[in-house]
Amino acid sequence: MIRRTNHQMKFNLNIRTLALSSTLAVSCAGFAAAQSAAGSTNAAPSTTTQSQNGKNSLGLTADQKTQIKQIRQNEKQQLQAVKTDNSLSKDQKKAKLKDIHQSSTSQINGLLTPEQQQKFAQRRANHRKHHKHARQSS
Image (cartoon, rainbow, N blue to C red; front, top):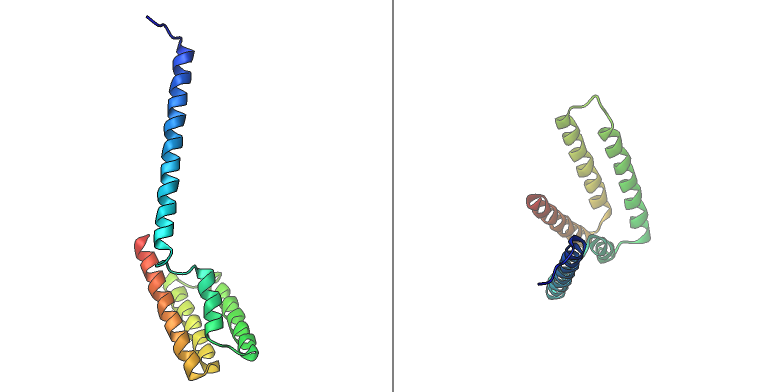
């Protein structure tokens, strides 16, 4: 009969646990890689890619880009001011934020050609659809 000390049994148990954990980690990594490779052809582009492609796909002139950048900077400042205004209720803040977004969108639309407006509207619809789905998932 073989007698093992407590230390030897713990050591063997730790090695088995480590081996099992390693096998599980490798299996999960392989599964994740397979999922990624399988889904990469149908996967939606990342937000960074979308915004970069979106800016280019509108075919903006340098002047339009400058004006839109200024509108977005003003929008950001207004949004920040509303968010930090403690005199407003949650509902009032929500309404003001929505108004600011709508105003900025209207200003941007005013700078765009009809073709650019159509593309911009499609981008916004896709953006809303994506974020609505993301909120429902969480």
